[in-house]
Structure formats: structure tokens, C-alpha cells
Amino acid sequence: MKTGLVSAFAAGVILAACSGEPSEGEPTQPATETEAEAPPAETDEPSSTGTPASDPITRLCISQGDSGDVCDCATETLRASDTNVKTYAALARYFLDETNPAAPVEDRWRVTFDTVLEGQGGMAGRMDVSDPLSAAHRDAIQSCKG
Image 1 (cartoon, rainbow, N blue to C red):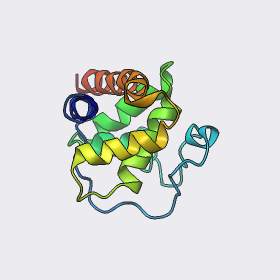
Image 2: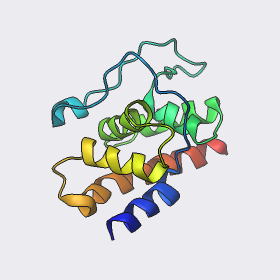
Image 3: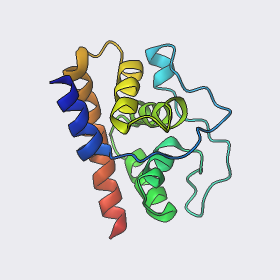
């Protein structure tokens, strides 16, 4: 059951492709729940729409093959919503920066969930947290594609 949930999430919810080498610099493994919900560091120059290229939500979108403009728009849309963006950013950041890009995507998401959403009631509880977040991101991406 656990593998099926992760498979469904990895395949149908985020579908993150390997993004190459992990970024250096910012530590991303949250030590506490509060730290996991901290906003992402915005150290890179803003893109044309003002979203920093270092934003983990934008980077996750780009790693799935969407354009920078679509991803900037989707990130801005998501951040303007009432979605728990801090948790989603922590998931995206951990997945992109702390997991091995050569590992199977399913395994990378499992490690990400286990680490970032620790204490959320097992895999089912973690899916209850992550599914609405990724659905909101997918909807934002589709909306920005026009």
C-alpha cells in the first residue's frame, strides 16, 4: 500500500524529473517543524516576473519540463493562495537539493516525505498533507499555461 501511494504521488501528482546535480549553498533538511515551514531563501536575482530563480517551487516546476515564465507565474499564483506554501516549498527544496538525482523518483519522494513530513501520521497522513499542495501547484501551472 505504501509503495502504491508513493507511486501514485510520484507519477500523478508531482512527476518531478531528475533535475541534475543538487544545488549547493542552502541547507534544506529541516531540523524541526518550524524550520521546515520557513520561507525559502531568496538569494538569486528575480526573474522577469519577480520570482527568484532559487525558489524551490519554481525549480520543481522547471524540473518537470515547464518554461521559466510558466513556472514563475505558477509560483506567484501558489504563493498568493491560501495553500500551505511553506510546507510545499520545504518538500520541493528537500526533493531537489537533498535527494540523489540518480535514484528513482519514487524513492526520492519517499525519503522527502519521511523527512519533511515526519510526524504526520504515517504515509496516509503525509499524503493528506502533500496531495492538496501538489494539486494546487498543478492547477496553478495549468492556469498559467493559458
